[in-house]
Image (cartoon, rainbow, N blue to C red):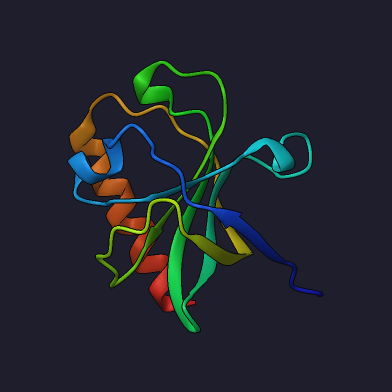
Length: 121
């Protein structure tokens, strides 16, 4: 399988990931609508010649009653503010589909499971 490296500029999101304890970088989802199955993916993020593991989410944030898809990546072991900067990323293995969580606690627990799975791949 050929890995495609995408390049995009980091934009401001709603801050929801940070509030959950899993800050994300937000990217433009438009180029993926209709071409990428919605859900969580293993990803790699390349920033300033370093590669990091990431948990990529593409889809609507149902817990916030949103219907439009977002593209956000929680970069593991990374705590820099890089708004406005350009990153490269690779979308890897599909982890799971979009789910609607009854509360933020259950969402946080699922994100922890997703990250464990990504670290094991």
